[in-house]
Image (cartoon, rainbow, N blue to C red):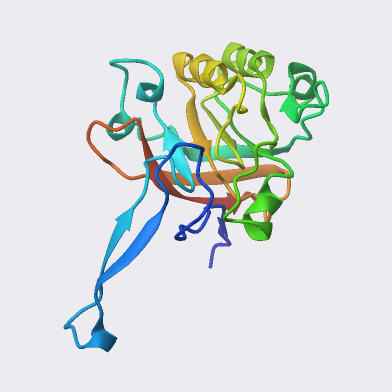
Length: 215
């Protein structure tokens, strides 16, 4: 059997969400143990809750929404890169940190950072300080023409400057996966399997994501 590493965050009631986003609520509407014929539940959450994919429509009016994601955007070879976010001591991943990684056109790059440990340590607490891409690093990735970028917290950009980072990547046609859990993935080459829900008119959608180690 193939070895698959689940790099998705488990959706839980009360889990950490981006400030201002709807909280995650799980409600059981029918319950077999209460005498109902079946278990039926309702999920209330934002499109950016848990592991999710951002489409260009997130920051670009009239751009492609999540239902229009190209079939191969998030399926295929990917590389997990260990990033420390040492640029300026702010938890920001800078261009200098990326220049040593030999990033190539068309790659799918997933950044493993200290953020991954937060999902197990405090899944319900949003951390204002987390490792993220800076604008220079985003421009570098855009110039390299990578296909996709993923990171292991709720935003690829920080609380300050995150909008610019998103715009740089999305305007370059780079698809973004956020809120990954890469704690079980060692840096290296994998096959990425990431499928966001196909929802009409939305700028993002939850996704289930896996990595398969390459031989």
